[in-house]
Amino acid sequence: MCITKNIKQLKNKIPSTVTLVAVSKTKPVEDILEAYATDHYDFGENKVQEMIEKYNKLPKDINWHMIGHLQTNKVKYIAPFIDLIHSVDSLKLLKEINKRGLENKRTIKCLLQIQISKEVGKFGVSYKNAISILQESKLLSNVNIIGLMGMATFTNNKNEIEIEFENLNYTYTRLQQDYTQIKILSMGMSQDYKIAIKQGSNMIRLGSTIFGKRKNK
Ligand SMILES: *Cc1c(COP(=O)(O)O)cnc(C)c1O
Image (cartoon, rainbow, N blue to C red; front, side, top):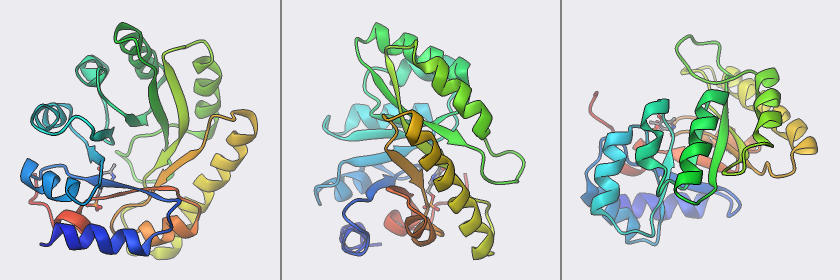
């Protein structure tokens, strides 16, 4: 796996308006350093413990993205350094992030994870819920909801994926009218990022395309 080559090829391929988050979960710090050496600074992890271990070993100008489901009791561990939390799926979680942001004297950037797939077991809130969380967030001064995140159904049916991303982009555009701080649409993974970009994504989260297949864990 040539990480350097993969990152460079990807960046040549995607529009410059799309931010690439390199999803390094399960991969060693050596792999992250190889990507970092190409002047890449955005990395995504889905487990708090693993992110902390990597954070401690790696350069401090890395922007860490929490992309996995986040438990309320673990927010405190990442609050001092996290750049963007993609997976906010409840007001309770947002309030905890706000509390820990305040403790660390920082405003923590968040995305609301929207449920766009019909698959059970995927996290995320409905459009209606998103509006009420955005409304409540006006009272929280140490969090800033700057966008939305969504995961499409795991399927080979490209049409189904396309419809889900199209719906999320529609939700994004509507919410932007009332909440002007919304400017990030995080959608697209290795298997569906091309469809996501076509449907308006400006942040893609790619793991295996950059680092190679993961062992099941
Ligand atoms: C693992 C993961 C990714 C990256 O998956 P790949 O298929 O390896 O690109 C993106 N987003 C989330 C939320 C993930 O958990």
